[in-house]
Length: 268
Length: 295
Image (cartoon, rainbow over all chains, first blue to last red; front, side, top):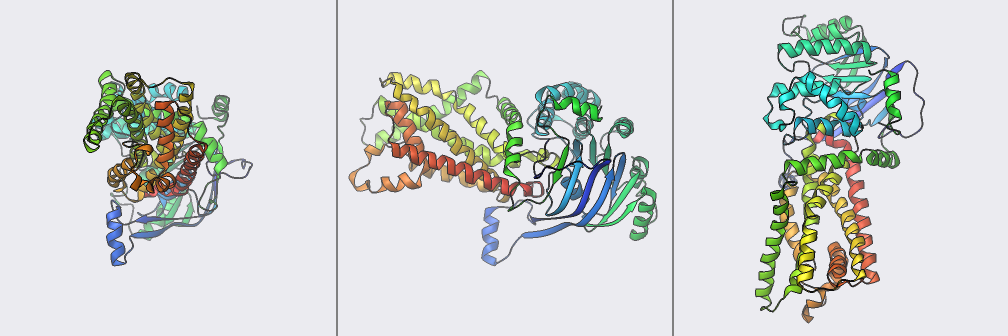
């Protein structure tokens, strides 16, 4: 897609897939699970506010050269997902600049699930069209996606009839079949049964050879070490460290005062 | 597969596709409107496909689905016909019924666009969290859905048009631009309520009340000429504050009687349509950055 928020004509930086410069992101969100007008009025009467400004990223700068498989680690609320969303163009920056060279296929939130009343095929089509593919391109991919996810007999059934494993298999399959130059995965690898995990791992290896870059957010340090050749560590919106996955993970574990225990070394 | 060459191969198919993006802070909370509009237009197929899928899921495309689309407003027209007849002491004939159906069916299109639009962003769910695309496609798709639900009522109206012995004149064509304005107006409404619903999830619970009042304040159940003398002062007020007064009024006048509405009606209707579209979409676009973190 041509950039939704890109303003000036700019020239792509050669050799760089993603360049993040002085990126700061803040947004306002609400404490309430379901914000309603009724609650807003009640709160207003008591002089309270449920809206909170969150500074998710503070002045983050880094480059992702071509061929990088970047692991992003950090504790909950470190800004990992926000960073991914901003690179995917879903959450534009408040300050700074992000340059992206390549087609992104984000798998940020598990499930392609656009509408559970629609069939898997319709959801694939809608996701592809929204991402800027043409109807023909989407139709071409739909078969491959279905086959890889192994849900041929369910593809025309409404997605509300799917099991959670089928949901995540389909989501993963869609993301890897959209011909991404840049693949972004947010903790999606735990999806599916053992057989699918093996298949997913193989596909990831294949993508390593084809895709220009990959971003992987994971709490599984094993996945990061295995799949990534570079890592960054975020803490409370700040970039703490950038480097070899092993070094970064060691520092991170040191910071958390936990060793490479059995908990962090879960399988893929 | 995902090398430069395969991207380049797709470029010819999608002339706007570029694989280079720069994201920078928005000025005044709005993304650059021009590239936004370009992207919106380029992905219009998504809006169409989403609306088609929703219509399919709701069985609208089946025979009984279509029948229900017609039956529901028709029964309502019957109810209102009885009600108005009783309240006014009887004596209303087929020409009134024809006028009532023309107005009511189209009023329900506006209401449907508003209600579907309100649910459109919330219903986007995971797609909004995973994909960057102009979100305005969602409420616009909802308007398309509402339009296709309204469409089967058109032949029904013409049955009553014939039954009532209403004239067939070329002036009836003036209803088409009014219909167009009603669609534009509804797109703005759908966008406005779609964005509001993200912040206040009970917005759609207020809509039925709003719609009921709006129906009574619009020239659907009554005609401007029907107004008793003591209510004469109300008409000029409604004319300026109620957008549907001119939009629906002009539409039904042209369609049912073949009268080209006054120039003033055209002007007010156009102003309302443009204002609703502009304010609704700009409000929506200015808020859409937050949708991903608010859902």
